[in-house]
Structures are given as C-alpha cells and as structure tokens.
Image (cartoon, rainbow, N blue to C red; front, side, top):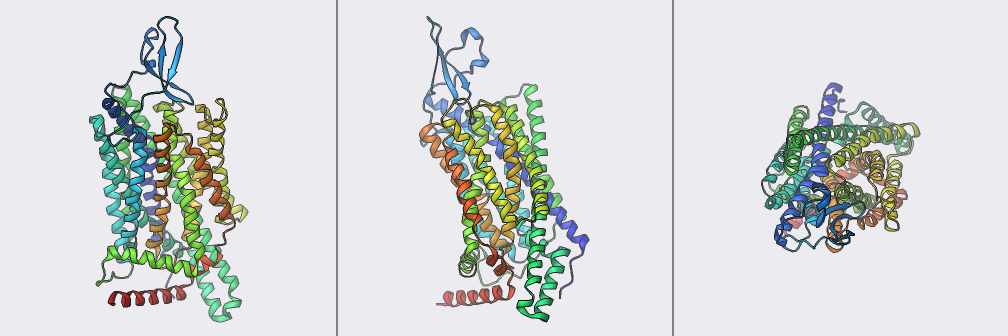
Length: 551
C-alpha cells in the first residue's frame, strides 16, 4: 500500500493550482470579455467605413446641439442609428446605417465572432494532438508552462493594435493564438485535479478502507465502503474545483479592476479609446505571465510512465482519444452523453459572456466605463456564487450533478428575459439597468456551474487518462464556444442584430439541463475507478493496436 502524500507538499501543490487559475482567468474575464472585443470590433468597423468610401460619421453627442444632423446616435434597444434633422421643419428621423463589409464580405461586427469560432477549430485539433502528452513523463508540467507562456505573450501584443485600423486582422490572429494557448494550458492544468483529489487525506483513507473491505469481506459486503469512497471523492472534487474557480474569478476581477483604472488614467490624459483598450488588454497578458510563474514554482512534475519510443506522441493523442471514446462507449456510455450535454450548455454560458459586452455596447448604448462596471460585477459575483453554492451543497448533501442542473435552469432565465424584448420596447434587456441586475444573477450561477461541471467530469476519468479526458473536456468547455459565436456571426451577418441569438442561448440551457437531470452517472463513476478492469481493457486495446499497425 503506497504511503499518503505529505500534507505540506499537497498543500503547496494546491496553492500553486489555485494561483494558476488566478493568473489565467485575467485573459478571459478582462481581455477577452471586455477590452479585446471592443477594440477589435471598433478597428474593424473603422476599416469597413474606409472601404465604404467615407469616414465614419461623428457621434451626435460630440457635436453642438444646432448641428446634430447626419451624425450617429445610439438608441437604447436599437443600437447606432443615423440621425437626420430636416432643415425646414426641424423634424428628426432615424435610419439604419449603410451595410458595411470587410474584405471577403464579412460584417465587421461578425469578424470577432468568426475569429473565435476559427480559433476553436484549432483548439480542438491542439487539444487532441497534445492532450495525451500530460499522461507521459514530465510533459504535464512542461506543456502547462509552454502553452501558458505563449498565450500570455500573445495577449501582451494586443497593445500594438491601435497603431492603425488596418491592424484589425492582427487582432484576429492574436485572438486565435492566445485562445488556443490558453485552452491547451488548461488541459494540462486540469489533469492535476484528479491526482490531487486521490492524495487528500479523506479520499486516501476512504480508498484504503474500500480496498481492505473488498479483501476481507467480499464484493457485496464492501458496498458501504465503496459508497464512502465515492462520497469522499465527490466532496474533495467539489471543494478543490470550487476553490479553484473562486480564486480564478478573484484573479480575473482584480486584473479587471486594474485595467479599468488604466482606462480611466489613459483617457484622462487624452489618449484615444483605442490606446486605452490596447493597454488594458495587454495588462491581462502581463498579469497572466507574472502569476503563472508563481504557480509553476509550486506545482510538481507529477510524472507519468515513460513515453513510448516506437510511437509518434502527437499521433498517439488521436489514437488514445479514439480508444478512450470507444472504451467509454462500451463500459460507460453515459460519460459520452455527459460530454455531449456539456458541449451544449457550456457553449450557452460561454456565448453569453462573449456576446454580452457587444450587445451592451451596440444595442444598449453602454459606454466603456459602464461596460467596465458590468464586467467587474459578473466575476465578483461568480466568485461569491462558487463559494456560496459549495456551502449550499455541503449543507443539503445534494450531489454535484443536481446542483449543476439547478444552476443551468437558473441561467436559462437570462435569455428568457431577453426574449421578452421581442414583444415590447419597454422591458426585456431594453435598458442598461436590466443588464446590471442580470449580471449579478449570471455571475452568481456561472462560477458554480463551471465548478460543478468540472467536479462531475473529474469523477468520470479512468486512471491514467487524466490529460486525455481533460482534452475532451476542454473541447466541450473552452472549445464549445465555437458554436455560439458562429451562430452569432451568422445572425449579425444576416440581420445586423445580436438579440436573436438569445433564442439559441435559451435552448442551450434548458434542453441539456433537463436531460442531465435524468442521466444516471453511477455506473460511469464506478467504471472510472475500477482500476483492474480499466487496465485490462487498455492492455487489450494496446495489443490490438500493435497487431493492426503490423498488418
């Protein structure tokens, strides 16, 4: 029987794991949620106006009251309109803006959604290609360090975009590089979770009791100890995942506050909005880079078996992923069903976060400072929500799966309320105050949904396949945001509006949440922890693969 891990070493590792979430969350919560979309979208629109043959009209608010005609005015609920005042009667009319396009005929506001979707295609390829590396040698930590560093440096380079509106395409390229790098780093980062869970004192004791009961009392008599081991793992998973998510939101919020202060200062000294957003975006990269190195000092190698010398490791990722999915289909098909459901609902709440800032800017006429305040509210309440829902689970003893379903149904109320705006111009995400209220609601449920989704998934991982499984998890987590942005791009391209996307978001929450409520994962969890069965299956698969390769 292997000895328990030194509690001091485990505590140090957990601190490092929390710090990395604290570090990388700045990218999504600050740069990619607020400043990068606003910067790249404005650059793309400015460049599209130059292709249209004229400069973008000035905003009416920047002109004297007696010359406010043929200027842009943002109308709450409808977005930017061209304001025209009749010279004789003085009557005011509003008209839609001309149809603007970038090279290739793409709508400028669709550009960033399209770039995110393309980046996720590369994410999926990268996840599967390098995902299995974390299970061999010391690639787990090495992959985390390399991917994180590349992503952070790419994020720092957003500061170069304000040089010219024609740099909008460079923004799209940096989005792809930083997005893929973040996702790959989180694959390696998440693969630490099930290993740390097994090393906690509670799980270690429960597993040893389970093994002892199996040896002394037989399979039937040991069911109680098996249940105890399952509950210990679920509790440890929930606690570590929730704390990691909480510290991630704390880090993202702290970086966002620093970035908002930077926007205040740069605006006050007369710098343009572009440069303010560029500096604020790059701050996230510096934050990510600095704190990630603090995490790397605390995270151990966690080495796996030596990599095979007779196989291509990059190709091996695809082979192992295929075998893993096939294995799960045979012994735990509900794990694959959970992945499909997670793909849909994580796409929903990821798209809410991605689209909300442009919806607020384009259709609710919220300025940079108002958007910054909204962006602070969401991660702040996400941290509070992650902790609060964990405490709720501890007191109620409800499973992580049950709490996850509740969170999804509560999140569905956001797009449902926005759909009210199709029938009236008074309520239904027609006023900024509504978005502030829903921002609190969204944050309080988002952090919890992410934490419990990760906690449930980590219980379904066969031993020795941590990196493989979290590669699949990241395809359906970070990667799942391809569908929402793609739908958003098509909607904006065809209608010029973002609001119709709310219909998709409503379905993306309700349908998978309802199915997940009835999905039984008990057998999947047992199969994941059945070491002997898993090892035998893997040996047979490896033997089959060798024979096939020799044929």
